[in-house]
Length: 369
Image (cartoon, rainbow, N blue to C red):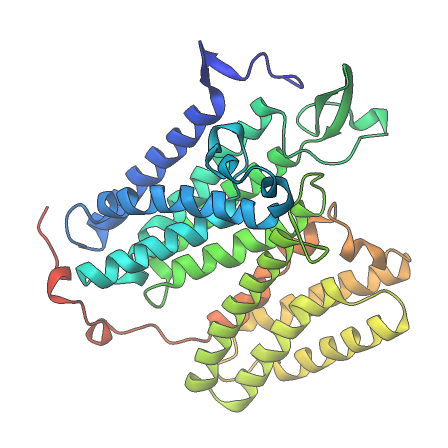
């Protein structure tokens, strides 16, 4: 298993293509179930797939080309040689979203509703599609120097100059993370408080995992010296946090609002703050502020205080063990797993959107199935 037997499933048909199509079909089938549950117009998911897939392919290629302009400068026509490889997940998300947004504007559909029905299936499609990297022997991490970790799926064997070398199997880690994102979204989709929230949670959850995994990849795309996908992941998480915080400021009292803001700041600062006194002192101060603002009371979810307290104990334990550097380590999965609960502190305090406040367009009246 550490070495795929072939890039092709049969003849010249590559595994990568088969897995990509399987992921798209899976996302489509799940989306149709959500389409029916939410009483959206018939074939909403089909229409979206027919728009999002080609736009996503274009976006995925353009994203890669922009990040690798030097590679295509000498032979611009090679931009169209997509069969030679060179696409990016975030480019496909951007391209697909733009295409669907235009479609919704023309057809007068609810953009947020369509994103919601696609989100769980999109996460599962990514989990399936990542195995295409396994068969292509790409998207791998650094060399594994410890013999104890040279086994599949912790690592995969990559042929380098005729020499088999063990590398971290980043495709597997991201596939597992994406599968977890799907499970969370699928189990919690009926508890979302507003249209569009399922997709927002997809962005936040996927972004947390991608931020960690991207640090391990040896083929990252760089922009101005930074790993583009890693910092785009961070940006998406920040945008989702900002959306939730903007809503909570309007809906709740001052202490709950400030507590949610402090919690969001703490979620990022623990991971991004430098080690040493100048980094740890502000983080500890934020912990203290959060614990005071989120003490149990009116409109404050009880889990908020206890989560921050438990996370604070983890932070202090790492400092005591002189392991604060782990927060910047891509192998420290807890750093990614611990961010969403801070978003949940704000989200749990939001009011559920009442049905009478949802205004479907004329073309979005519920359909019988």
